Every structure is written in C-alpha cells, then in structure tokens.
Image (cartoon, rainbow, N blue to C red; front, side, top):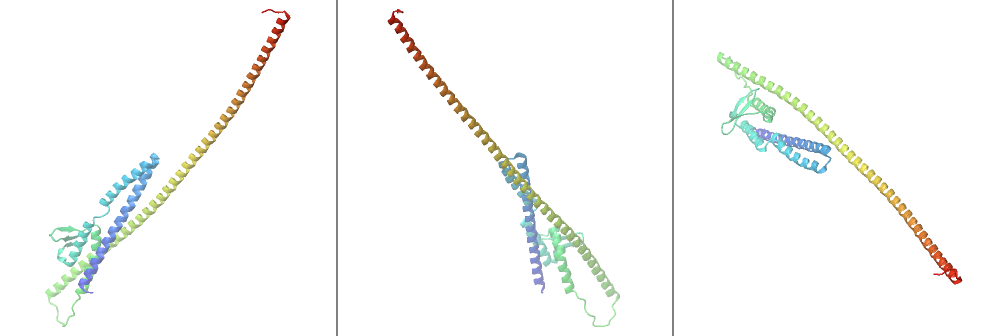
Length: 289
C-alpha cells in the first residue's frame, strides 16, 4: 500500500471515529433528556396529582434539558470538523507537529496558531496516528547492508550510538504512550460498564414508575366507581322511601276524605230527621214557630 493510500485510509478511519463519537454523545444526551424529563414530570404529578401541570412541566423540563445537553454534552459539528482537519493536516505535513511526548501533543494550524490536543482528539492521536507514524518509520528506515568490512570511525560510531539512543528514547516514549493508552482504554471500558448499569437502573426505575402510575390510576378508578355505586344505592333507597311515604300520604288523604264524606252524609241525615220531627210536632200542635 502506498503512502497516499495509507493516509487516505487513516483519514477515513479518523472521520468514522468522529462520527461514532458524535452519535454516542447524541444518544447519551437523548437518554439523559428522557430520564430527567420523565422523572421530574412524575415528581410534579406525584405532588400535585394534576395532569395539566405534569404535561407543562414535561414540556418545560424537556426544552431546558435539550438545550443544556446540546451545550455541555453534544460537541458542535464545526469543532469536530476543525479538530479532524487539524490532525489530518498534521499527518500530511509533519512540520506542523510542534510537540509530541507523553505529556501532550501540540499542532499548528494554517495560521500558525498552536493547539494542544485533549480529550477525544488526544485519544485519536494516540490510538491511530502514533501507530501510523511508527509503522511508516519502520517501513521506510530499514538498516542498510554493509558492503565492505571497513571499520567504522569514531565519529561514525558516535553518530550511530546517538541515533541508537534516540531510537531507544522514541521506543520508550511509544511504550509509555501505549501503557497510557491501555489505561485509558480500561477506564473507558469501566465507564462504559458504569453507563450500561446506569441505563439498566434507569430503565428499571422507569418501568417501576409506570407500574406504580398504572396501579394508582386503577386504584383511583376503582375507588371512584365504588363511590358512585354507593351513591346510586343511597339515591335508590331514598327514592324508594319517598315513594313509600307518598303512597302512605295518599292512603291517609283518601281515608280522611272518606271520613269527611261519611260525616257530611250523617249530618245531612240528622238535619233531615230533625226537620221531619219538627214538622210533625208542628202538625200535631205541640210546637209553634
């Protein structure tokens, strides 16, 4: 593989890594937005038991959390593109590498401004760029075969010794960088496991919250239904009592009416009888009016 092809493959790998990194940050931001929004909305609903307040809080908390995650968690695409271009340009033009050791890496941009790599940029440099440089140096700097048995001069031996020490120093730095990289990989694996555990816990809590919410709603519906049935029973009992009292009142009214009619008839009969008796006494001369 030619040098241009190797650089092109390396640039493609770096671009894909940045894309995966951006996608992971977006997924993390979406997860945190969901957890905070649903959790706080449920808290508001638990305290107020009012669905409109919970919906409003869901919208407000969602809006705020989305903006915060976009600022503090999701890296701007422009910044990622600038970092990618800075690293890729340094690969093509090694003169832009101003410092490269175990402590850090400093690269110069087109304007000559020096930038110190950190975070994901430094990780990409150690994981991809350093192995590429080591492989290129190993492929292009093979030791030449000695064609004669001429003894080396003191200056040549000194020069070779200095180069050997430089190579040993470079190998030492590479080994230290490799150990540091392995340490960071272990830390990333631990963080990934911790994040997976947090996601699992959050999912379990959300499922528990949904179960509690469903159970509370069903319980409230059952209580309301029981209350409605109780009120219906009370209303039916009152209606039945009113109907019985109405029938009783009608019966009493009818009895009173019958008694009154009977008394009127008796009074009429007595009046007729007294009139007949008086008329008989008058006719007999026993009474004068």
